[in-house]
Amino acid sequence: MKIDGTAFRSIWIDETDRWSVRIIDQTKLPWAIEMPRFTTLDQVAHAISAMLVRGAPLIGATAAYGVALAMRADPSDASLDAAIETLAATRPTAINLRWALARMQSVLHDHPKAERAEAAYGEAAAICDEDVATNRAIGRHGLKLIETRARAGRRVNILTHCNAGWIATVDWGTALAPIYMAHDAGIDVHVFVDETRPRNQGASLTAWELGKHGVAHTVIADNAGGHLMQRGAVDMAIVGTDRVTSAGDVANKIGTYLKALAARDNGVPFYVALPSSTIDWAIADGLSDIPIEERAATEVTTVTGRALDGSIATVRVVPKDSNAANPAFDVTPARLVSGLITERGICAANAHALAAMFPEHAQRR
Ligand code: MRU
Image (tube, rainbow, N blue to C red; front, side, top):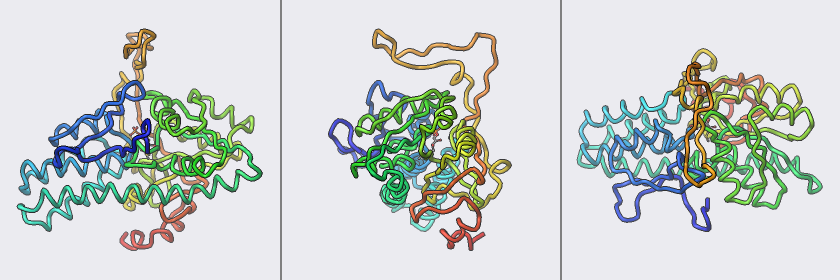
């Protein structure tokens, strides 16, 4: 996608040093565009846990490059195992992280140590390229859902939660890919963007992305979605996900479940867009089996933004002595999901439909 006319991915190899990795620091958006360069495993691990990069597919791609940096420094088995352990500990909910690490480990084990660095960079690049192709396919499938609601030039209003756009992936995004394609095809699409407290990924990141691409959007308080659905203002919801079980339960950013409940009560279709690397074939029950990340309470007790004098400020919005809790994700049961938009097509959120769409995985269980 483009930033002010120049095409970017969310992660890439530095133009002047083929061993170092660049990203867009998402903690600085939308106030500043900074592109730090990473040369060590520890820098990458910190970038994932501190959320300089975030979004399930991008976390996986970044972790793959973390392994590559570790192999460049020391290609031994011990170094490979330690890198995988370090990166796996950064964030618990997005399965793409574990998926990417397992893929790196199985590929690198087959390579002699002298070839491991090259092989690791090659595999990380392949993960990135595949992610872009996958998201394009998700976009094409999801576009059909928007087209059917756009008859007679009518505006299509889509609600989304958190950020599942191009900066949450390597490019295009998952939930936002169909929206970008609809916009590019001339469809009048408008997005209600949940602000997504506590970290405001909707207000800061989704709004930034959509604005840069010229997509009409309105940022709303997290609690406004139900009201808008009751008034008939939302035609459909599309969100991303960090982990989908083999039975179709969906973990996504905290607050997604409430949106799915409101959508069901109001007959609004609720779609989840995902690459198949987000499916955890080993588990079925999302409520009991998906680990939910608990992040720092300070994310709830403070808000960061640009002060009127132009400086970036973090201010406390909760009394000093109050406790705060910060579960970062919730689970939407499959029964509330209208459909899963994958790179192979759209399927129902249940074990049978997922197994039919991805028979090679289902058979392995
Ligand atoms: O905590 P985050 O910002 O990493 O959470 C991101 C989300 O919940 C996204 O919706 C999900 O990862 C899908 S990204 C295509």
